[in-house]
Length: 380
Image 1 (cartoon, one colour):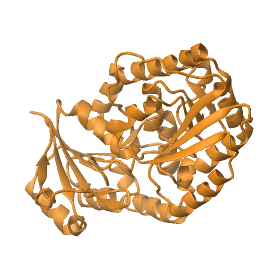
Image 2 (image 1 turned 180 degrees about the horizontal axis):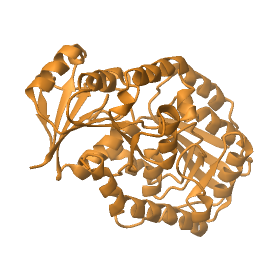
Image 3 (image 1 turned 45 degrees about the horizontal axis):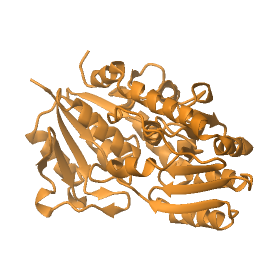
């Protein structure tokens, strides 16, 4: 008999604009559905919009390939509906994919707080200093309530890296049940494809939501200082999460020198991303915080080294020819890294590109990572 695993998440496929959280769960479901009986409870929205789910498929179980999904409209994301759902169904483990979600963590968690089931909660990088600095008062109140009702003691915490373990202990104490399991990624293609790289030219891309946390402005500032002897094509990929922030970015873009060519491509569904990244060379992401960074792994999977901040688990990248990681206070360092890739000849660049591809393949196919994720849902 398979263990019945229920997953609560604010957005899920076919939603894609909300980015990493969706991909984390999509990969988890894809890799574990043969061994677990998985049901996903989610909304009928994506980031800032309603997705096109037929009305007869709302608020009921929808059969997918090897698992089930329930898409809830706004009227059913409440205590009454959840209470009835929990009365009429049985399950063994429940997984909450966000710390600060009221409707998909706090509400169902509260209703299940005394049930004899295993509860697993992913922080998804939300306890990092950079993440907590955004809307800090709201998050401080949330954390206080969580501890006040001792909810932090009634859960197994899912950490994807040592940095998250440290963050959980800092906010909720040492004596917590913490399980380490790096995020699962989609299985990558088997064969490396060589990229074409012209001298003194580079195709750089930004892949993430356009918001303060992801620091597109920092990327644009680094590009603005690149020497005019180089040509950089910069593609921005991702949904606009903050319109006011995007206006500031547009002002920066309009002020860039002519040798920096910028295109905004919007959000691209994950299953179409590889086609776009075939033509890209380097990811530029001076993020203020990532607990894992699916876009970093996806870049490596597609043979793209990265230039990122030191606010992710991925460090000392230059040693392995995977890219560069550095402090956001080192603005000139990001520019220097971009110029380093600009001046590379085709053969040297493809050494870095192949290193990125092979690292991602080795990480994704590591059986230990798969077993760590399975152990999240198995009773000791």
